[in-house]
Amino acid sequence: MLGPRQQAQAALFYEFSLEDHVPQDHLLRSIDRFVDLSSIRSHLADFHSHTGRPSIDPELLIRMLLVGYCFGIRSERRLCEEVHLNLAYRWFCRLDLNERIPDHSTFSKNRHGRFRESELLRHLFETTVARCITEGLVSGQRMAVDASLIEADANKQFSAAKEEWDSRRIDVDAAPRAVREYLDTLDEAAFGAASEVQPKFTSFSDPASQCLS
Image 1 (cartoon, rainbow, N blue to C red):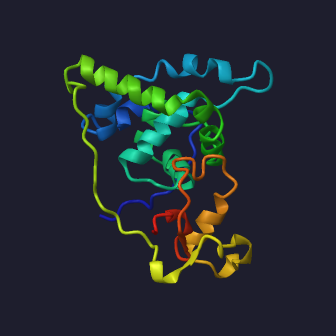
Image 2 (spheres, one colour):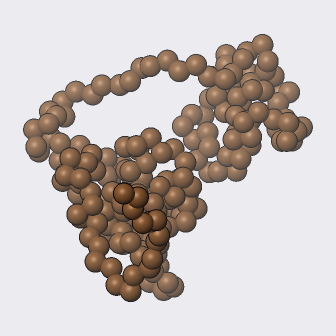
C-alpha cells in the first residue's frame, strides 16, 4: 500500500536532546571523557578587555579545532559549516541547536592575537602531557620525533639568487598556489621567525620553502 507523501510541517513545540542523538560509540564521546579545558578561561583572563561586548568562549574555539583535527577538516570555513550541521559536533562543542557558530575569521584573529600572546596552545600541550604522565600513559623520559621526508614544490632549476628575488615583480593572478600563499603571509609577524638563516636561492614555485642551498 502506497503511504502518504512525506511533507515537512513546522511544529509549535519541539522536544529534542542532543545527548540522545549522539551514538555511545562515537569517537567524540571517547575524546570528551578525557578532554579537560577548564583552565583555559583563567589562563586567558588577562588578555581580555574589561569593556566591550563579550568575546567568543575560547573553550568553544579549541573544541572546534579538535573536531577539525580529529576528522581532517583543514578549512576553518568548512569547519564552521560542519559544526553548524553535525549534531555530534554541536554536542562536543557544547552548542545547543539554536546557538550560532562563530565566524571562521574568529580563529585567525585569536590565533594571531590572544592565543599567541598568552601561549595558550603551549599551555594546552603541556597540561595534556602532564596529565598523560599522571595517568601513566607516558613516562615523560623520552621524546620521539617524526622525521618523515616531505617533498616540497621547490625546484632549484627554477629559482633565483636572493639578490635577484623581488616579490613586487610577481604577477599575483598568474602565480601558482604556493606563491600566492607566500605573498599572503609576508606581512605576518611570525613569518620566517623559526629561522634567521637567509636562503641562497628562492624557488619561484614555492618561495616559502627557503630550503635551497
